[in-house]
Image (cartoon, rainbow, N blue to C red; front, side):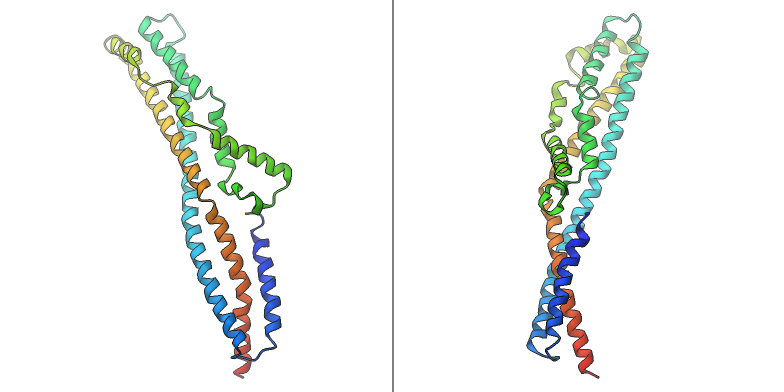
Amino acid sequence: MDNQLLFLILPFSMGVIGTLFLFRKPAGHRVWKVADLLWIVLGGFGAFGAILAGVYTDDSSRIERQIDIAYAATTAFDRDAARFRLHYCQNDINEPVSVLCDKVDFLSASTAGNAELPLFIEVTNQVSPLQGLRFVLGRPPDESAEMEEMVDAVDSFDPDQFLAFAAFDEHTLEAMGALRAELPSISGDFQILAQSYETLISQVRTLKSEWEFLQENAFILLLQIISLSLVSFAAPFRLGKSLVELRAAR
């Protein structure tokens, strides 16, 4: 996060100022005991926040892998569809092959031809769910507005729209059955293409679920920022207590 260092320096500076005022008190004074207690409490809260943030980081890494998988599934489907049309749909074709070619066109129209699909995958790759914490990030108005539009685009994306075209229907299965005896290669290639299509739908739906999970739990990162800030504030008090005790022990 761009401003994370600032969120640590400010409370640390405040803690240093407070500690300087406490140096007027001798070792063993009640204020140093309170300072020690403050460090223990806030340190424990910081450790708890760090554990939660670690879990969230693991989930963030998982969505990055899912983005790569979705990209690969999109590329595989586009490649299989282009190859099928090039090999079997260019010349004079019989009716079963025509049915399969039409089906390939329908499937391509619902994926590669859908501008929202590559946009969705691209935006999830560029925009962290932490962008939802806009008031913490302190971004310029123009950049914040752009980020908000991108996040809204991801939130509004609905993978179920791909179900408008099923990979297999009655006419498609009949055409595949008619081709198995005479032209099994066409039937086999369409089977591969249909599997690529179903894999693409599955992976995009999983990516959408991963995104929604991170969006819903983005508050964990805010908790991490708060906990680290509190630890930064309390650290100078604990350091000051140690210095006062060492000076008194001389």
